[in-house]
Amino acid sequence: MPEVEEYLTALARTCRDLLGDELVGGYAAGSLALDGYRPGRSDIDVAVVVRSTLDEESKRALVRGLRHENLPCPARGLELVVYRTDVAGSGSVEPGFEVELNTGARMDFRATFDPADRPPADGGFWYAIDRGILADHGRAVVGPPAATVFTAPSEWDLAHLLAESLRWHLDSTAAASDDAVLNACRALCRVRSGRWLAKPVAGAAVKSQPGSLDTTVIREAFRARDGGPPPDAAGVRRFQREVLRLIEG
Image (cartoon, rainbow, N blue to C red; front, top):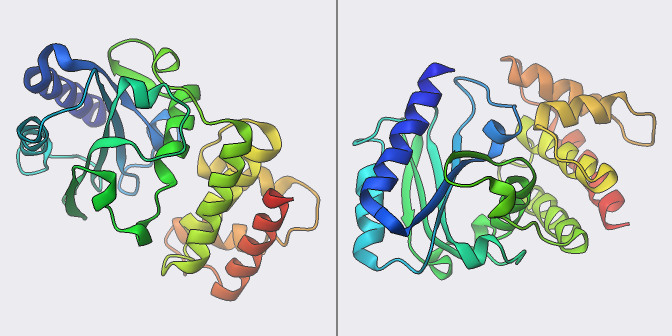
């Protein structure tokens, strides 16, 4: 994916120019970190780490420099989060970010400078989950290895965060999407095996395992990802509730 690599290089260069010595590193996260990136569908997830708290002008300058209109994103959009080093390495379950930026041709623009300003309905558990993925699989675009910068939450905390993500999906309008099904599979695989898998890989793994789960919705989720109809909403909710029961158990 040359266009993605070129974009990440340009993003790192922009961060270096704007942050100077304050920049610790920039890391590919999400599907890029887990080798699950799918052109035309996936977002580009990036975590930037800085040494100390950024002032508001530095935050606004970073948003201006990285938003899609100034640095076109080749994916659906960029989801970027900036953390201080003490937050990245804390293992905390709190959001703890300095800047959150969503920008892209097919993504609603949003820039948030304080976790308290983020709508509670959007969920505050994603950040610690993402830092857990970064600690194990983050790919350095600039800076030291991700494993030396990020610390994952404890296994106990992570199980609670993953359960919270399932409850969020059950309550959200995206509950019956193929992404919600595969997110549940990823959560279950992480709790059972201690390993992070890309969502499609996790879906295939759960589908192949004997057990009490009805895996029909997983097959439907894969068909939906290939352009088919969305999975059955009632079946998805049953599947999510069962996975939630297994994780909480």
